[in-house]
Image (tube, rainbow, N blue to C red; front, side, top):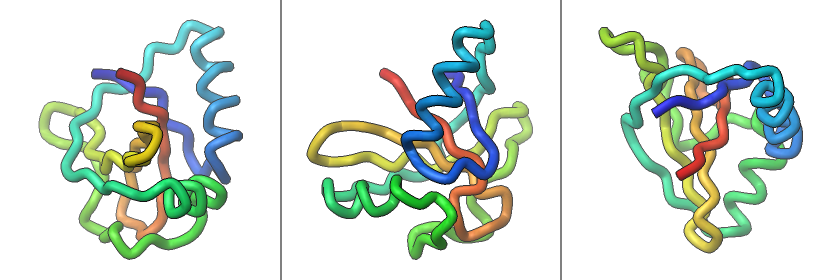
Amino acid sequence: MKAIFGRKVSNLAELKEITEGALKQGQRGQSYCVIKEVLLEDNDFHNFTNDFFNDQPWITKEDGGVNQQREVRCIRVINVNTGEKVLVNTEGYTYPRYTAIEND
């Protein structure tokens, strides 16, 4: 599985724009593995995706980074109402420092 991660993206709308542009340029993304999943109700997911710079209680500094296979370690955040998914690589922070859209 591969995803296009954006660094310090402010919200989901910006992430979608960056992802679309990267795909048009032929970028293929980075391999990743999911280390945990977080399920959010629609309102909580909306609050999360409106401001990626906010610290999240379900993120620890140990989440993220890269494993021995050079895959990005990330958290899969799922909107339980719509199924929309965002990947988060924290790189040692408690906010979503790197984010990507996960497609099925």
